[in-house]
Length: 237
Ligand code: URA
Image 1 (tube, rainbow, N blue to C red):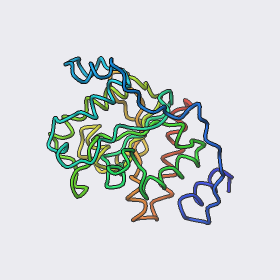
Image 2 (cartoon, rainbow, N blue to C red; image 1 turned 60 degrees about the vertical axis):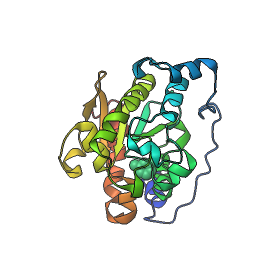
Image 3 (cartoon, protein in one colour; image 1 turned 120 degrees about the vertical axis):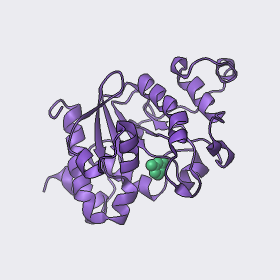
Image 4 (cartoon, rainbow, N blue to C red; image 1 turned 120 degrees about the horizontal axis):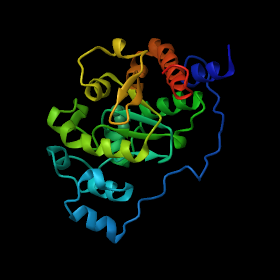
């Protein structure tokens, strides 16, 4: 078994996992948000979301009251990671841990996602991670269509600013929403979809929370990750 494959299987709990201890590169870590007067004016102004830079977009999201979810959130969960990454990972919505910490995928599912990414040579800090919804739906219920509609422009602006070479979508709900389909996840895996005005390659895999409940599917997720890597490297698109 190849080292990378063994690392992945071990990392996700199929065998004993020994962390590789890859040092974090401070050069790729996202800087703390700066509060500048241009950010404050961007929040106050009605400048279109599509015109905002990273800081102004973050501030706009933090102040968002477009849907009911702002009433129950602890804080918004904007996104995290390397703003120059080739990779964008998109999940559904923050859960309780993410709502508390203000960062996507920090709970148990996030730990598994980190291990999955690390196994294909991607430390968490090297990718960008975001959700469709920036606020937690109460009780972790599925996003309502009107909530997704309010939040999707923020994700679209993140994609436009990031210009990823590949988008990895985790989970059925996120995949169905982004691809505007009812197709089951099994049918959405294993192919290269195209997303947005730049027709960015998009690959679908299982949600790590689902993999925690159904560990027998972890090997399929490994196949998906290798597929996405191949897309990025020009082999599968
Ligand atoms: N599930 C998601 O889809 N996103 C998170 O940030 C956490 C759990």
